[in-house]
Length: 400
Ligand SMILES: *Cc1c(COP(=O)(O)O)cnc(C)c1O
Image 1 (cartoon, rainbow, N blue to C red):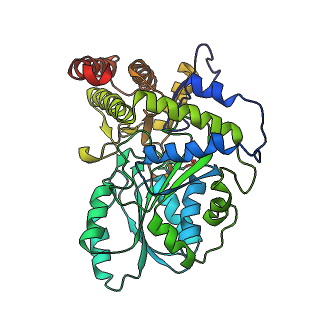
Image 2 (image 1 turned 60 degrees about the vertical axis):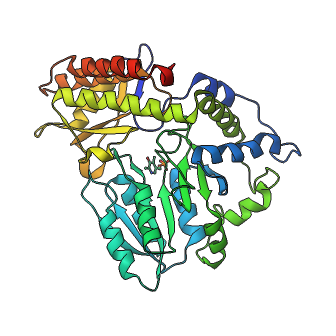
Image 3 (image 1 turned 135 degrees about the horizontal axis):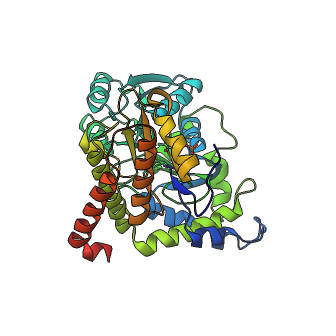
């Protein structure tokens, strides 16, 4: 099939996300000397401002060249030793890959395998931690927002379990598709490591793994014996103090990050979170109007950054995404692994507005229609329009 390439390509995947023009322009700067004495003028404020996005006052922030996966690896390799007992859960492609990584590093993983569409199994975590009277479990891992299934789990509730049991394990959270777009509170939720990346809520190209590490975790890292070099927190600390790096950093990315943080603060982080809620509600209203189900089973866990939409039995969601791509010049997220062929995803995070959401819904409707799925054309768009009109009336003071 020939791709239709007129106009702007619709990018409705949950990362990489659309980059605001001001950020794209900020990335276009000449190379500069990363050992210059004043390089810290650019980088030091970034560390401070990232803390605001993670909602932490005391954590150490790291920026590694890499993607979110490198952030995961930094947490495992800097804070644990081979054979350490940890508890993890998988309920989608991303939570599953972090489990696989920890196992490859030789951690002794209590792996809670959860049906895809559900979230963190709090009860099972409680049971396992309660039995661990000698506190042999060193880490509790959790994926805040499972991007493959559109499930956002309650991290505060996980913290409450640890507090209730007085369990000292480190709370390690994948926040790659939540930081900067969902409500995320590192300090309040007692998170010890929060992992993120540049190409989701921060609206940048892929290229930075951004990790925030609590002081408690920083103190314990001396006991952790897994080898780490490129992703070493210690090596970073030595040079980060003056705003420098142990190896050549991606300087353009720092300029882009400066612009994206300014962009977020200009809208206001709380307004960003409200906007994501508003856009997500509209997408869900559209899905409901189509008569389709989300992969996420519990409405309390519906993600405000991505919706995984189940196609009816007998249809292939990959065909829907392929049709949208070639015929309507737009990308929808594919179903990954266990949900391949069963779901397509609409990413609704980052630099996105109401009209773009309507575009995504309209394109998805046409692609589903072309694939023979019985939905009424315009029904999802109309449902979304109604939520926007109603929400706008209710939220004029927030949205203004
Ligand atoms: C995107 C993503 C990752 C990391 O992926 P990279 O491609 O390495 O940036 C990890 N976890 C979640 C939940 C994600 O959405």
